[in-house]
Image 1 (spheres, rainbow, N blue to C red):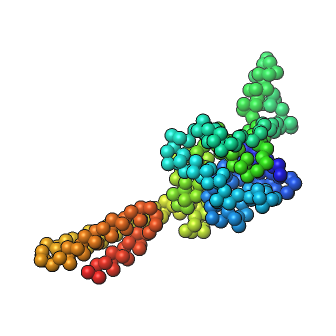
Image 2 (image 1 turned 135 degrees about the vertical axis):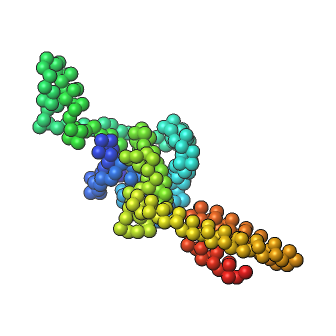
Image 3 (image 1 turned 90 degrees about the vertical axis):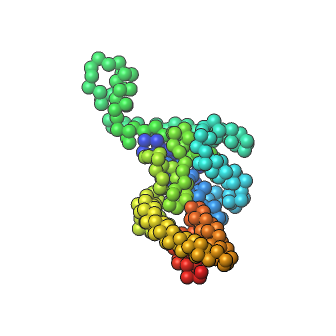
Length: 286
Ligand SMILES: [Zn+2]
């Protein structure tokens, strides 16, 4: 099942082709790789292009596959500590897994209608200098050099992708809105991807994420005001009734609960809306 993945570093695209299966699809560079490792549980019934490339069920990969788990662990490690995200470390990782970079070559697309020499007007240049200077200023969408990797397995296309991403000094990140992996192509400090937001089908993560962060902050400000109000009331009750042990116990439990809520919100396990609702109830309950 040989197929190819071809990276165009000028257009920042990747083309995956398998003529035998009639597959010829173009994505933004690194997208198929980032998507593949974001799928996890749904991998079994996924229609992801890597899955469609494979004939044999035995060649398929699930989230429990050794390779899938190890590659994710490596990605997570590099995201947690970006100083570990180096080509050297990746090559060592491949060595540990018994994997290697798939065979690859450069593909030249040279515009035959406009010879590059014609783009240079300076006279008395040697043919070589005229050609090099012409190529340098040529339209790179017409004169391209791409990297083509020949793959025989899902492992191959994954290894080729991360190798190429690293070679291009591109990074892998996790989107702050949908939590999927992505490769920021234009700004390496991007924190949101360009997928459709899981919270709003009409907006991309980039559009929806910053809006949600802003709204979330406003809601957290509201929650904080409410928390302080209840805190003071409960504290006052303890001070005024030093002989009632229940008030003191209630206050301590409540404070511990609040701390847990804050951690859960920070980890994305609960929302600020739920926190406000709980605060209101905890106030009524005594
Ligand atoms: Zn996203």
